[in-house]
View 1: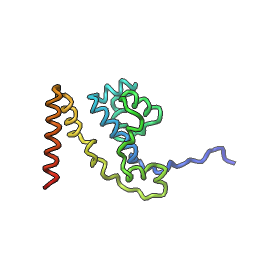
View 2 (view 1 turned 90 degrees about the vertical axis):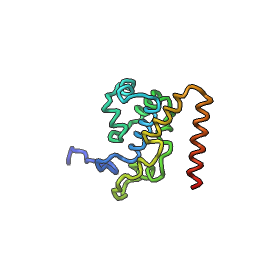
View 3 (view 1 turned 135 degrees about the vertical axis):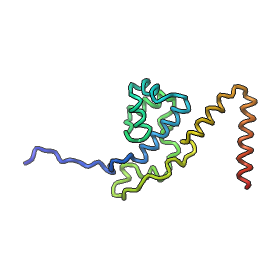
View 4 (view 1 turned 120 degrees about the vertical axis):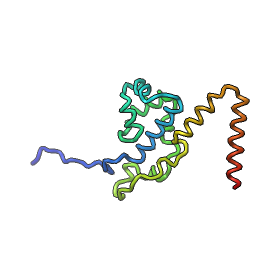
Length: 152
């Protein structure tokens, strides 16, 4: 009779970040950047180093429930924000869903325009326009330009 407990393999653990963790991390980065917070400032607010925040944002470290709760409070968003806009491809590759599936390479994680730095900088610049009339004209201009491109 052995006193050693059997070693359980974690479902879907390949050493690579899970797509769900990558998505949640990208949403943390999105909100942090929109608020103009550095990784260091966010880390300070949570009692973490900026390196830990970096790992969360890349999906290299999973974010536990209590940490997700803290992040939602510090970043002033509901917990559901971190899961918003998750594609079905990503949600189907959660650890529970991944059991028995072949090891597929992550794909399409930077396709979401909301995750791009350009988008974040544009939104921040837009909200720095103090005059609401000018801001509205910039908004209308952007929509008009988008419509011109759509009709091509």
